[in-house]
Image (cartoon, rainbow, N blue to C red; front, side, top):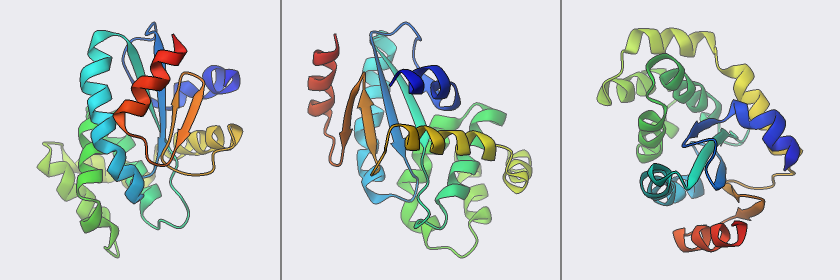
Length: 180
């Protein structure tokens, strides 16, 4: 966990105070159904705990090779965040529309349509996706997953406690109580 904190946290997309009592890390992939199922829990954490400065939340991309569009979705989300400050909005929209874009042959048009839906400028997003500008960051995040021996997604780390599989909000709260 020390190596994760020291070397890899800077690559994840974070929300919340660096001085928060607990850091929650999520490793996920946009084409993963279980990750999509975790979205309401993640939103609840980000909307309820982060504003109270009790939690810092960091998302790490871990697109699985079996999910043929997951890496491109991660690129699009990172582009939305880096260029237009809309990572979380776009991140959530990728999950809620997963069924539509995950079955497409070419996802670029789908990703641009989603961007327009959430009010993003599509031209700079299209250029960023084409150049795969965030690829090195995503590769660092994949290395972070290997460093901790990640075996499945979603994997949630609450402080130093690793939780995989079905992760209800109540389980997160219990893990948080053990970290304080």
